[in-house]
Image (cartoon, rainbow, N blue to C red; front, side, top):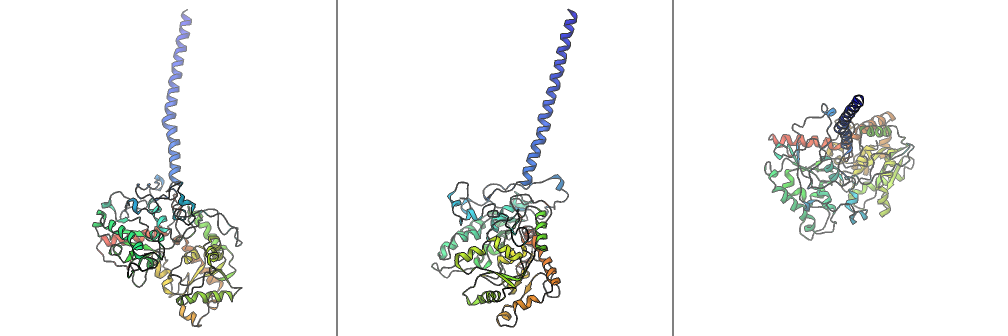
Length: 497
């Protein structure tokens, strides 16, 4: 009886030990292993997280950028780089109707479609051609509208590492207003009142903010993704028609640092930054791979041109270039955009444009509606040496923050300038000028162009970029912050910087 009692006692003791051990195990698993799994998942999500397609709400706080302990030593200091991003009321949110299920997405020309994927547009599928195994690679290429930089820049700002919620602690104030997209909504035949009123109302609202009062808006900056000329139209009366408005002529705009795609080199009121191209990589490895392809691709054509004739007497150079290309079938390749809708569609095809430029040594960039062309930036990304015909079209005059300082002996090492008047007067010939460059000189110039690619493209704003590389946004922000710091120090810069 006593032995049986002992066995029962030991059995109960053993059961108690087992229960205690199991409890400790479950406790350990719940608060250690599950926490590690959850942390790993969240870290992975943050590594790839970014604004969703069309994440352009102006009323919610921006998502903070992903921060990792292993990056702490390499992250630049935020001293002198803090930015306060304004929250705009809904009436100034031009993409507020771009929500899932909206009928706006049924129209391919609607801004909701054009500005999808955080401004990048639809992703491009790989396309074979040019003996390279594919003109358009698998990753990082989109059908990006040339006026999409406002949306792309805004989404990059949402991930900017030095955002602050305290305006007093900020070096600069970012204004996420889409002045170019506002203009996009109105035809060139609308009245002056229709074209002027929205931006005028916005500037009145902006100048009444407490953040504006500190420096009269001189620490504010924004992107207006059209050329400066589109914002300098002063109507003579309400019935006057035409494209554009007088946004940059208003005193409030004159106080801000406004980034456009082309500045007036004779009377600056803004700073030019590159057009967005079709390439928006998510890693430095993607950029390096494309640069290697641009270096090694076979280029059978001496020069190339994508564009149309223009009836304006001031644009006769385009007709001259087209005639020259037609007369040089073995040396020049062309995308003719002259044939109405068909020609316009052809020249807006990323695949056809990149196929043309990656197969050519030199890419001709005559003046169009204004001095600067998006085609010039596409040429750089394709590794094609740009040929300019007016000083105001050159990167030296326009993209002063982005152009590398490598001009030696008065000769640019990455581009060619052929004076327009000399060409029209018959004093020089395009083919003859370009044929003078030896294979070695062309290779050296192309290498300079290829090295410029990161500075003239914009990373995918939806993801955390893998690798260390500055793009067009990073360089623009360095320029904006340097300019604003000097303004805060009391310097009267004008547009010297």
